[in-house]
Image 1 (cartoon, helix red, strand yellow):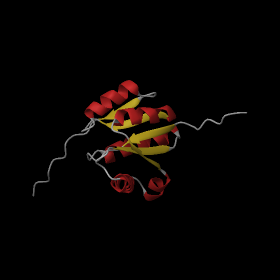
Image 2: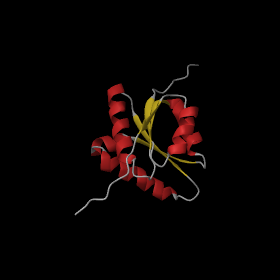
Image 3: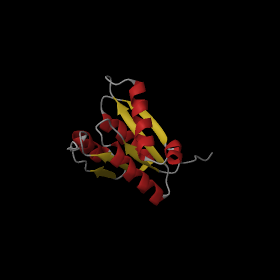
Length: 132
């Protein structure tokens, strides 16, 4: 009996910290360059509703990628009080994990230590309010 191994993918870790756009763009470009599928994941905690997580992923994808590309991206929502542990588990199927260094600072540090693949940490600068 042969076991079929799924091809690796690029995993984009998205959070509600405003960094989804830069994370998705980098991950999408890497997935295209490597000719790999893209999966976007969000780890929700007890305080987040599943519908909020689904809205976050949908808005992030359709706000930042072409509609046909956004529709083809695999989405995954996990429930875990330790986002780094959950993302590290997903990294076993990935060739690359992309995450932001914004509010996920401690999570990203822990993820980098636990991941089964390279982790691209995207720096995110705070948004500057427009001056009129």
